[in-house]
Image (cartoon, rainbow, N blue to C red):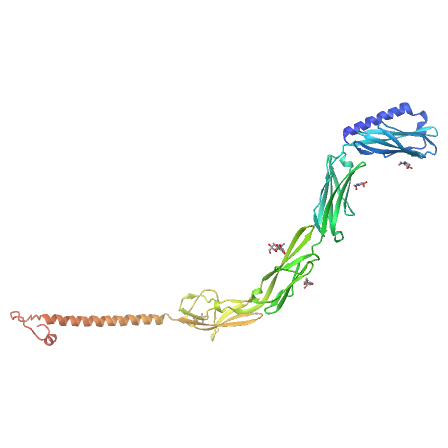
Length: 444
Ligand SMILES: *[C@@H]1O[C@H](CO)[C@@H](O)[C@H](O)[C@H]1NC(C)=O
Ligand SMILES: *[C@@H]1O[C@H](CO)[C@@H](O)[C@H](O)[C@H]1NC(C)=O
Ligand SMILES: *[C@@H]1O[C@H](CO)[C@@H](O)[C@H](O)[C@H]1NC(C)=O
Ligand SMILES: *[C@@H]1O[C@H](CO)[C@@H](O)[C@H](O)[C@H]1NC(C)=O
Ligand SMILES: *[C@@H]1O[C@H](CO)[C@@H](O)[C@H](O)[C@H]1NC(C)=O
Ligand SMILES: *[C@@H]1O[C@H](CO)[C@@H](O)[C@H](O)[C@H]1NC(C)=O
């Protein structure tokens, strides 16, 4: 009630009381033995409403039970010790007064009427349209322009289950909030009702919601770690009315599981299988999916293409022995020289020497067994090469020298063919001589 309303009510009460004391009450009124009751006591009503007032007493011999009011009134019945009246057009706060006589004593009782303006709109109810079993959500019911909001009563119900909302009022707004966990028994179409009552007036809002359960999908492998070559069964199951699709292949009907079988191969290791489940609830399609990974135990093995079996390298050069082993569990790979059992590193650079030449056993080992590949490594010495070069150089040099010598000799012969200088007898005329003689002779 607003302060002004209270003030008005208080003034009116005082006024009527004064009137009663001055005009109506005989001196013996204080001694009355039987009280008079007014029902309802201090009602809160919507403006313009009407209501029934009942004046009653336990006095065995009551007389003249009547109702004093400024409002339009109509008697609607009376009996031994009671009289009832219908009051209408209640537009503002007022007070009614019952009076009567018991054994000559006057009895009186009053009731204050509080009038509030009334909201014409229904409360605002916020609920989800779909609700999964086991999930918790909060329902909100709000109504504003309500006076006095603090006096309003709120009822919230889900189907036939009464909820216990927390009610708050701020000014002329009332808000009721309840937390609800959907249970399996409530599955199906349900209605939520919010009923706000102030005085004899009530407003309600209703909302439909569907409570559903969506179980699954559960995706299973007959073996999560299967040996290569064994059969594996993949199963996907979900609740009734749920359609499952395993690796794109739908189950025969909603509610039925989907299955697929395969013979596990190396390529299925780490393969993911996915199952997609759909459920239609209230014309809405809900999706859910799961995936599971298969591990296949295979190997050990060495990929021949990734491990060259003939290698020719030069002495004191850096090289990498590129070999790879596959398998699950991961195998370990080692290469040993046959005879010496010296190990060469695999996959990392190293400098080869002549003693690296030989046949190697490259072994991949895992808990599942051993796989061996033979690698022949041929390391060519640098010295042999150098000797070859020296030989070639020497032969070339020899050839060049011989050729030069021949050319020289041949050139001398040609020149001696043309003339002969006789330094001993310069006075003699030049004469022709035989070459054979010239070769044998030195200058004189
Ligand atoms: C008025 O109150 C009396 C006593 O409580 C009861 O017997 C009677 O039925 C009531 N009348 C009406 C119309 O409610
Ligand atoms: C609202 O609740 C009141 C009090 O419980 C009740 O009298 C009234 O009938 C309800 N209104 C509706 C529409 O359910
Ligand atoms: C999945 O596997 C578990 C345990 O292996 C078993 O209890 C369950 O029934 C299986 N579910 C389906 C749908 O195959
Ligand atoms: C699940 O399957 C439905 C139809 O079967 C399809 O429309 C949807 O896209 C699929 N969802 C996923 C995540 O694969
Ligand atoms: C369902 O599958 C799709 C594609 O396969 C993926 O993108 C999505 O995240 C999955 N959803 C769930 C809930 O696992
Ligand atoms: C070659 O000889 C060296 C020492 O001279 C030795 O460290 C190395 O292990 C040998 N390698 C092989 C493959 O025999």
